[in-house]
Image (cartoon, rainbow, N blue to C red; front, top):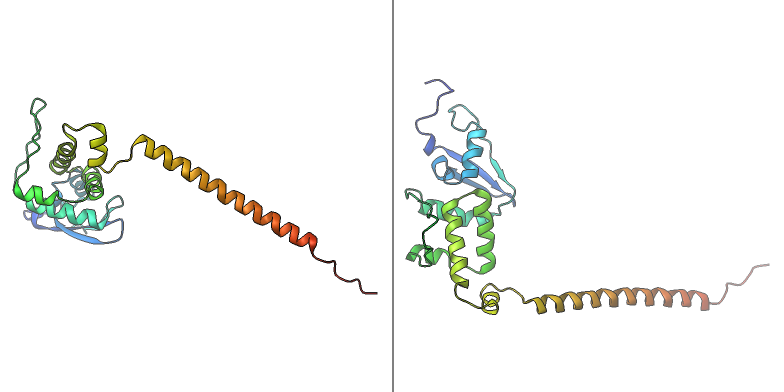
Length: 196
C-alpha cells in the first residue's frame, strides 16, 4: 500500500475538531462523516490518506456545549441508516424514548442545537429538531405558539423598544444635566486672588 491509498482502517482513525470556545473533541472518521460538512473537510484535508498529519479541524460556529450534544447524537446513530422523508410523507411528531429524552431541553438549547446541526449539515439531526419545533406549535394559535416558543408578542417587543428609547433619553438628559451643573459650579467659584 502506498501513502496515496486510503487506509483500510480510515473509519477507525481519529480526527480532532476544535470548538469556538477552544475545546477539543476526538471523533472517529466514521462518526464525523455523518456530518456532510466534516466529511467534506476530511476529504479536503486529505485525511483519507494514511501518512497525512491530521491537524485539528476548527469549528468556529460551534460551542463545546453544542458539540457535546452533537457527539451524543452521532454515537447513538452511528450504525443506523437514515432515509430522508419524502415530499408526500406526513411528518410524525412522535419520537422514540431515546430521542424524546434527548430533545427534552430548553428552547434556547434546542435552537442552538438546530443551528449546529445546520452548520455541520447533519440532516437526520436537523430534520428531527425541526419536527420537534413543529410538534410544539402544531394546531396552536399564534399566542399559544409564542408561549410555547418563549417568543414576545409584537406589543411586548414595541413596549420594550419604547422603554429602551426612554431609558436612553433619560441617560442623555442626566449626562447633560450633570455637565450643566459642572459648568455652573465652575462659573460660581470665586476667582483666584491676583498676586502683585
